[in-house]
Image (spheres, rainbow, N blue to C red):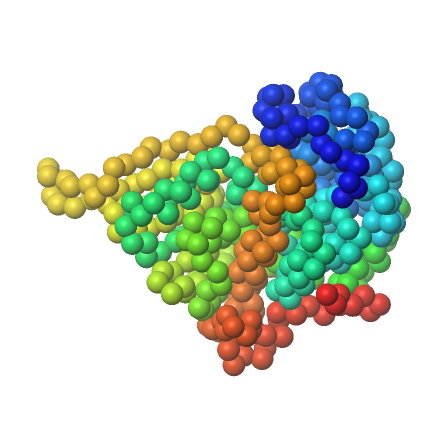
Length: 446
């Protein structure tokens, strides 16, 4: 980062003083930024991919008065113009509008970038940003393959960049407290961790015909390293998540968030083995490719971790449509975005029940995990320390999620060799660790 920039004070103090909430409207944004930093003290950021989470992340980081948006980039000119106007409505200066992220990275005044593209477009701009000396906030999952994750970690280390992955639970107060409780040992020996996401708001995606590329869209650039295909609106914008060319379905969309909490609390790395099954059982005739129903089982050295998801329904485990349950001999801790609780194990007849530990009713925190995550990111840009979800941490959750999808595709139980970084005696599974890039794109070398 340009050495002339010395931020005026702790971003955490600024955020707390402004009393900011996650969904800050335009007038609130303008009010919170009244106390402006001098130009020489300002962090200049750019956004690559600003349709969905890219814009949400930008709104969050712009709640900090010492941050300015210098440029935004998107292959859809319509989105680009809309987001530029959105920033003006917030009372901010209109940023430069760029369609090719490489032109953004040429800007010597740019300090950091937010990558909010579809998953298949994370790796290339991430590594190019490292090479250009930019710090990075990257949406989860880190990448669309295991090998891309490995390369991105190497680039982070080689170029000394500050990287924060979008697994913001690591900056959320009640998730931190839940993890501390799990690690306290009060639950007793933990034999199983259940992780699940049941998303009733996600419905079937109707089949639609291919069509002409919409005006203003650089579709070839949107495809990037993915296979050449006719334009279809189902594969574009939000629903790209349900097609293997660009993403890994709910396993990598929500799975990375929630599996990450399990990995964090249990303080583990990659599993010993993984197996998975699932399919399109709820909506077999719709347009999507990834499973609407899936279960994966991860074997660690002394416990099991399961992943369980379903699209189109909500009522599931512990009456929560998503969460992580740490099942110990003394009790079970359940945590989700709403809070955490502990349910004790009970012994003896009903009239003489013995509780093996104290019950803890559900409680959470009012803080915004995303806002806290952005504060942590900016503070670490200043200090050059590792953020709460740095590259190595973020990559692990993505890799574990990809393991589940690889096991699903092979239909076999797979055994992981931690030293060699590949599956044992399974050439098909190992081939799925590395993506195939469409020419003229090629997998980066770091």
